Image 1 (cartoon, helix red, strand yellow):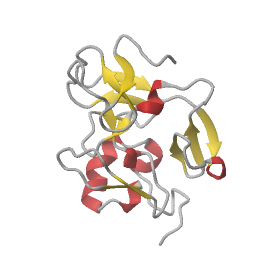
Image 2 (tube, rainbow, N blue to C red):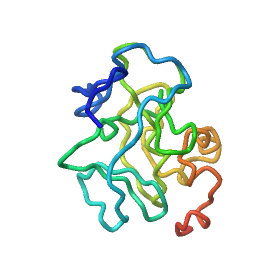
Image 3 (tube, rainbow, N blue to C red):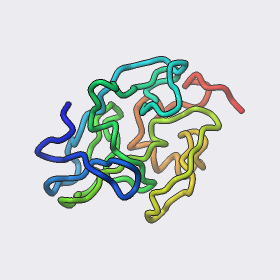
Length: 165
């Protein structure tokens, strides 16, 4: 996939490095972008690799020889795109203005117990820390479930193959 399309383009972001921005106004509830990459096991994930968790031991990693725009969509605690159908396609959650940066909530794909990174979104409802889905408070987890990947939606730590703490 190219780093731009008629809907969006990749460019410098004030949030973190590069980001993806709407080129035109995007209406609510439409598919915006598939997430592409190469599936790898958890053991192959290394620091600095752009990757998202897609199963208990599966990650979708960037192809360093052919980066995809979905590798550059940044996190926000109050995102404007999400996994509405539970698959690897980001959908608009509300109308998105031309020039607005696209954001998804990284917690809606991640489930590694104890994983966390500081959040820099600074938006309304910022949690301050990005955690795995099951480390979110129950009320936040329930709010995020409709935009999470399908493997997380109805799972608990046991059925997702994750160790209970």
